Image (spheres, rainbow, N blue to C red):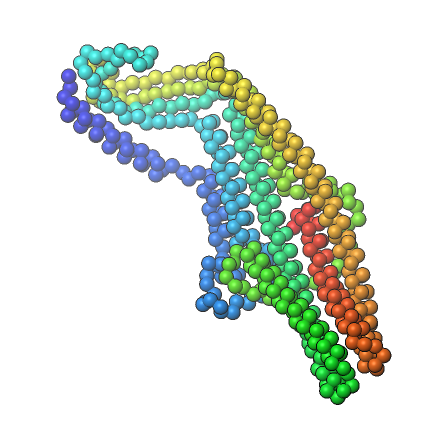
Length: 472
């Protein structure tokens, strides 16, 4: 028998030598061609500096005035793509799905393993229980490599790769859908700030105008030309205008906070949003064309179509599991420390065919599961098409209504201004009471607010219609 100390020393030497060669081989391997470049470029994109300091930066002590930043709609859309975590997370999910395709495709490549083995055995011993193998064991220290290469599995791996590829494409479309949803939310928040600021301007003007009326009526009351009742009505109107101003200020701050949150900022920010008015055009007239356009461009529908194709390929792969798998095998190595019965080296090559016979109906259950899941995805696709058609129709109706409101609110404001002028003239001439003037002031304020909101409501409705049909 070879001394155990010498056997152990030889095995340690072999292990050190093989580990050194493995480290050199690993260092010389080329980088993966797909993942490293894709993830690096995506990380670079996410890490690009934005025109506004990062959200984690503080603006100073608590209670300090918020920083004001000039912002256009295009700048807001560009910024949110870089900073919004939902868009980044969706894109990372898409990149992860691409790695699943690479994982599945690895079945086409050879599998190579290195083995180091040291065995010490009792003289003339045999393994007598526990397996149907050769029971003879020898003292030895050896190292070698084994290689396995798939020859064919009759389409099983091919369909698995196709299924993973369709799943990756579906994740790409989901990332695009998330991007479109965030862009729509930014557009709505941006127009919401503009709308809130327009209402705030109306509230400021209303307070100023009613303060003038109060001062005039107060002077007339002191001169005994008007009664205390007139002064009370004027002061009530002024108080209502101040309440309107408080609500408008609160709504404007809320709209600013909503826009800042979408852009990824939790500290106080005040955006000087820049209104870039464009020519107002009527919505498209052919609703059927818009619905068909949505079926082509909506990423949610494209994603679920890819999911259906992935499920179909997975079902085919489950069916192919019943076919044999043919692989080539090879092994080579050396045995520097060995029994005299053993050769100093070994090598073998062969072909193995693995034929599934019975596994408790596992493959048939997988095939049935994949078929049922494919049917479920198909039904979700039909439901999504119906939902998209409904959403396009609803957004088209809303856009047309908002467009029609532009002229109506404009006419309403003109008539309210005329009524207010007449009421003020009649009140000054003593031909009407303060009640008539108060009513005219209220109607004029409501008309001015409605008219200032109508333009932004139409632009919001037009943005929603674009999102529902062709995307932003």
